[in-house]
Length: 85
Image (tube, rainbow, N blue to C red):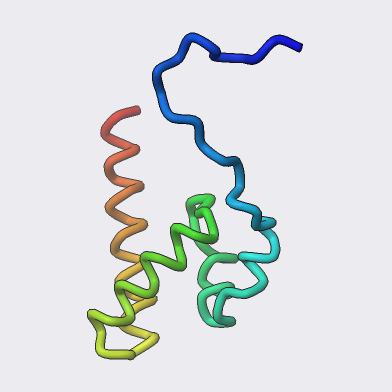
């Protein structure tokens, strides 16, 4: 059997880290799943959960403020995408 990228000096990465993306999505808080269902961008469940946790800490535990912060992040990403297209 022939190995792909045998000549590459890049470190090999493990795919998926052993977690099913749908199971990661199912473990998200319900308010975050609702926000994600209406999001304009196709967020990765891990990425949106990481951003939500950071926003939640910054908002002092206020979920509405954390979700508003996610709206700001998404708007900024959409604006950046519009400029590059």
